[in-house]
Image (cartoon, rainbow over all chains, first blue to last red):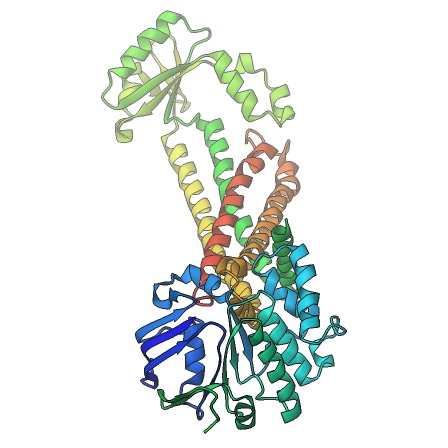
Length: 225
Length: 303
């Protein structure tokens, strides 16, 4: 599903974020990417979305070589990838329903699809009774559920999560992890960059540790360190 | 359908959110397009004056009434043999009156008071290959100023020779100065209009950068993101153009129509002339919107 071969990324200011990373992730896997700040976790995620291009090496997502994808095809790549961030990235002037439907609307999905899928996915993430709540009426955990619903509503092959529990208390974090696990169980490949040791240790999933842009550990059913 | 609906809603929301700036862009577009149209109308007005006063030729040879076919043929030949002459055409009374009536169609005070068939003579209309060699013409026709300062001609059938060179030159020069002057101001204003429209688009995109960021993340195409802004630019330019055409009509009604009947023998622009410049104003508006869109979108939306 995801394959990185000798991937390096050096930014224009000379900072090397990734240095010769090899990584294979199979369809349906759940992978934690761990490592200290500046180890290259976020760059890895940005490369998979083609927000950045690798300076060296090849990146494949869903069978496509990203450096071969023309700029006007990039949106279609992103429709196969759901993304979740630490800060939820919800639009404050839209309800939970509208935030999720926005993602389908802007890729041109017809109204009957929207009306069917959005309540369905919000129910799936446990917000079936909060369709019309605005983000500031929801708790942090609930907002993150909306953002996961938005990421999953178009049934992506891959879900990328960048520190999804970074702003949440431990109990809420566990709930969010249960939800991500549930999403993974239905076949979605999940890649989650995190600092959260307790969570990584509890989940016992594959752990890829980055340090200074290099993979220093790749362990199935691993722990944080 | 859903797509059109989406674009319309996004554009309307953009204009609302961006009200003041959009208004500034629209007003600048309006002033620019108005001046642009004004320059075209000034040129048109002077064309009419030139046509009325000189028939757009440098020299007119007025003929005795009524001219015989023989006179016309003979004089035409004489004139065409002169090295200074480039072309000669004959305008009979009917054609001259038709031109007169057409020019002053909207000024009945003139057409009704002038017995055209009696007053306006047939003429040979001459353009010169070399305007400085004008003297060849009165010489060939035996014309010279008399003591009263009027030109008398000895060639049979010729009533008078009128030298319009200076008048024509002066009118053309005035037209040029006025319309080029106004046109230059219009071009500068069009530049500001482009800058302001581009700026509103940018501000709109900046205000919505979070939304745009999400749209890009979930895989909205660039056009899907851009089109509402482009439509916004088009609407601003288009409203400016409509206001400009309207203002030109207003100018025509308030200033030009008042002159009708007040001044003599100056044909004035009509509604049809204003209508004729409207497409050009719309084209200019489209150009403003396209350039502003290109500038406004640039670099903001690289994937």
